[in-house]
Image 1 (cartoon, rainbow, N blue to C red):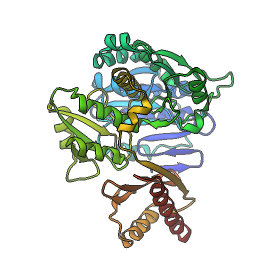
Image 2 (tube, rainbow, N blue to C red; image 1 turned 90 degrees about the vertical axis):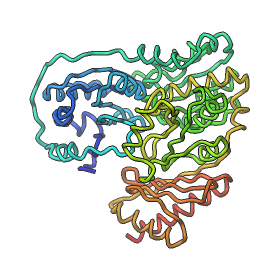
Image 3 (cartoon, one colour; image 1 turned 30 degrees about the vertical axis):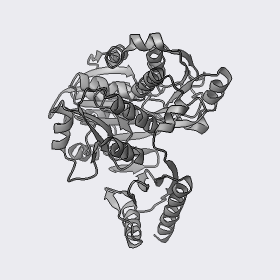
Length: 473
């Protein structure tokens, strides 16, 4: 982390805080100018977008002003889901990108995310940029003004048209009898997901698609089951087949099945990957799983069942920048199913190199139509695992010291611990694992196991050990 105040967090590639209260637009302009000048070492094109938060307009203007001061060529997408921004970025071969979104925070917060080059890389380090950002004077912002004209671009129609090159939509449309509900949480997903599902022949009901008159969200932004009571109730009352819910930037997808079970995009992706492999959709190409620290053991089991080669992006002997180039960009013999970064969600890089809840929703509809089965029936065919997670607060504690001590204690107890940066993972074969990841001023403990009781046990015992270590520092 570069610098931190109670109201402002400026990390290596992102700035977040309460906009308009403690973070002034001029500060954002300075950061955008520095990023633009740094970017010009390799390119002068940058693409920007935002998730639809009301304060995003103010931030967008400040970013454009800063980029203009650095003489960048700007492609402004306006309100745009995260997956679409990155799809257009890669389609237009633009190296630089800024996205304005903080999908897990209240709407008066926002986050500026700075990207460069390959957004699917295992290591994302902008050390040179970090040094320059660390020199930003937050208390004496620059007041420069600039009115350079920038290019506007409508990404929705481009993404929409390209998406359907991956679907036999006319056949699906004719066969489709599905009735579905989409709950975008008033976020950017409302611009695209209902249209995609209607194009596939679904009868679509959209709920919770507008902010209220005070710019409040109709529900909590993160699409967990406890926050999707409206969707579950509408699904039950209307006897719909399946429900889809996004977070505010449509990066995340949660699916509610016909029996009201809640599934993450990771679990649905396991179903999609299994479908691809069994149907040999890609005509005898070699399938590869690229797993990360957080990947479910479901994918290890699926790989074993189908004799799929597995790469782990936290294994330096297996994974390198050269390996990425070989697998993703220079070889058409492979079909990659992967996970973003160290802890990120599932991606299908043959279409998009970031997590794409829109694509996952469309692919699930295709599978439901082709199989003629309900989602609850299809999920019985996917390896079953249970998970738990807890958080431990770290007020005024040294994170490096906590992680070092935790690793030492776990190793002393006989666990084989994998450490990447300050992330820890340990477990046993394909039976269970525990993942420990830092997040702001807390540490998350996540466990997964074949039995519900074991998943709970591993999560709780690890959490208690972590709390004990924190209490002694």
